[in-house]
Length: 505
Image (tube, rainbow, N blue to C red; front, side, top):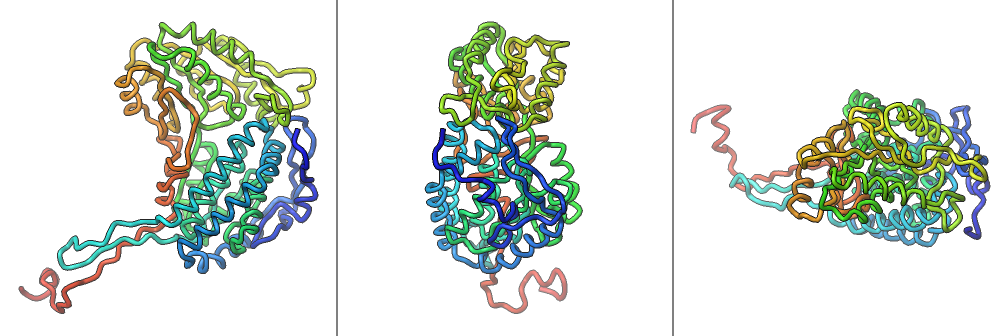
């Protein structure tokens, strides 16, 4: 159990909107309650943001943009280094709040979410100094050309509930490192750590208005933010269905758009793989964050000679996973984010019983866990490729295992969903693994592992999983405007090319 926990209701007594450097209540006239999914207890009731709050946040970001975009890369870098230090000082508070609002095991918050966010911040502190364009050169012979990267303006971003702190950082950091200002809408279920991130930025000395947080419903605050005429770019992480709606609204105002959407990651095990490594990897990769991860392993395709042994070993390992209080240090699996999400996951499994075998799990635990949104780790076999549990994003602690015979078949099955965010291939054969990395249609392909991410490398998808990149220097492609500057070097008034318009040579 963690000590010295801050009181959430006191921390956010002034409201759950962070606009122009201060907390304030929303003005929608409607409230929302953050609930601890492990116990069902109320954590914080706050007033939701409405369109007027979005307007004020965008106006604050617009006011802050000229000065922030004019700051030198070194000045922005220094500010982000200070922010990383503040986050490190407050790491325990961030971990506590993240586990409280999401139900994450505290070991996940303290060893993954919070240090990952601090590392992201430190990375972008360095990356802020490396907004590079193509070197100057005389490409036409008569002119010198070079490329500038410029901030684009006010960014309006929407983050999901599964990794509230990390997703807030993924949206905010590249945007402000490049000189933009931002209005972020976190999910109503999980606003605490996004608000704390903005407060930490103020403590680090970032100017008011550079980071603003509006916490409201998607149809009110979210759609108004995406459609706002002063927002020049939208970055959205969430379901593919909602992403399509975001794209419709953004397109109407010709905004730049970055979408990180759903996933249904394949876990491709060839018959020469290390069975023990693959089984351990499958359990960890399917159960991380209680399966509420768009890159989580959801479809294990196992070449037939290893299939039965893989199913047996994964089931055995899943049965050792410890469900419990998220704040207990030995808890492996916490609840889902809400009872509604738990019931949605259970619905997928119950429907699958009609056409597949639930090998282990597939139930809501009783006893001390009955009040929480818990669901046991679940393994399903015998499902058809076109079945719901294979094709649809479940977003829970559920892994489906299917056999395949040839390498061609395995890769084809792995690619046979609308999604393409992440995938993994398991083999001792470098040529086999290399082929998989080339042919699997996903934005990230792991070999003999599944889940690790690093700040220096990009994250983003293919197909219905969206487009654009989070993290890494590649994210600046989303958040900067590329400008070509071209100088005449000849000082000649009547240039030779003019004859194509008027006159003779």
